[in-house]
Image (cartoon, rainbow, N blue to C red; front, side, top):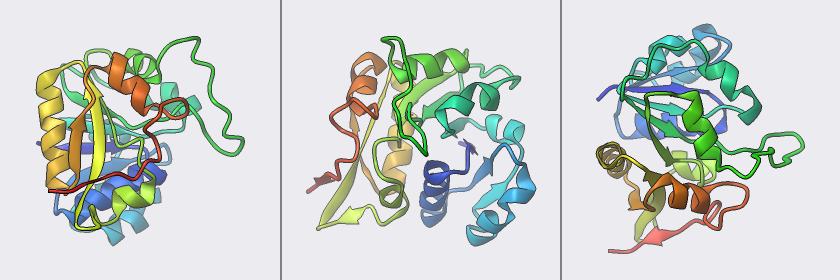
Length: 199
């Protein structure tokens, strides 16, 4: 399956590095255009290439990791998602103040899902610190845990396969109403925990 990345900040770049380390090709994009990503793409060649937002969004699996306030603009005017898988790696908080965004009682994944109509949303890759996502998933003789959740079982199966291919141990937290709440940062109990599964 083809993979696209919208957002080249800490999380998006860490995901790209994890893919490159595992030899998985992907297209990464940001709001500034492919030229601004030449250095990152050069570092992660031949697996990661720079593209437009539309090119990244056309992939079978698309990871979105954008500053919370910029999500609506980043996802505006894109073609219909048509049942494709979109990984919500966003947190409703951003620098420099790191004040929680006002969600009016909703989960961040619910708000995100409204921005990608027709997509099958899976929450993942948001709860680990970026250096742990891009680093070696083998730790202390085990595999680093990566949580995911979503309402579509087939979509979760595909994301679980990707997580496994990257070397992590994936744990399904269930539907977004449960898993999205557990992994949401801030507020959930799971973000920033560096857990290892021993065989």
